[in-house]
Image (cartoon, rainbow, N blue to C red; front, top):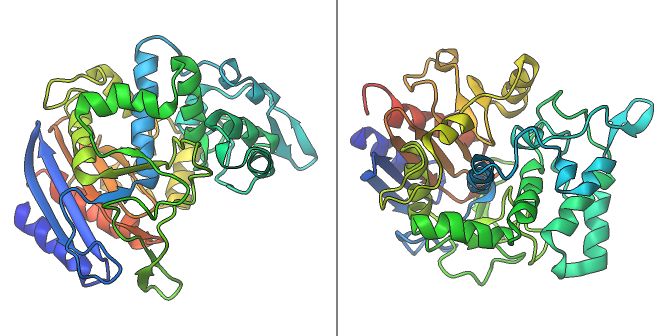
Length: 377
């Protein structure tokens, strides 16, 4: 595995990718790490082991871990109505050909976890704009999340799959149930137990953040060029996005990946989830129509979708040597986290290239097959 993976990672630099860092754990032991490339716009500084990256949607893995902790403790249920915690959601309406109408049935927690809520990823929706105009940079997570349903849902919850702001809503629910800020909850129940010392929420402008790797974007000509250091999904400084708000390091995320791959317990003995809860995360929650939507709209062929993470359910669809049950997610800057509880193996890949479809269709599946392929682990 090591030679194949190193050769593949190094080949990505020939495609214009500025840097790669990949860590593989097996049963609490780091069995592989390789990094290459540069961290600055001038491409003169080598990336370092503690390099920081905007994690974007890899944040969702932590948000799902947090909500599953609360479900495990009986503080809420997947079948609970969202309005029980966020009353504004009882007023949600759905868009129809005849105009807006009340929902036929309330949105539930499971609809948020499985991206079947009917929300979208429009960051310029009227409610968000209104709250930011009224509250400016001090708007809270709860205020902004409540505003999402000032616009109608795209469909009745549970009827379709649509990647959306659903997990930002989950973060607000975690705040209500725990009576803590989302960041305080993550720090107490995930970051401290796992000794993740370089993970925190982004601010609207990340230019002053030490150790943050230069962010790039693949432009319309397919050329990877530097871009600004901002995070589009960080709506204001006081907003803590459960869907895309974290900055972290490869090392920190590898600790989380290892804990999940090993049934919820870390190398230092900290238990963040019970094994049966991790297995619940891996259960596909999509029906046939939604499975077609995740394949057609996101290119996730062979995958289902569990609690906020893709789950490999049909390796034969893509002739993959990796086993069914591999689960995880990725981020807008092409990073990825994937785990397998059977072999207790995981990998985390960090990159910092936006709008790079090649990562999701080719790079991540290739690394998946190298790391989890039955002949290599």
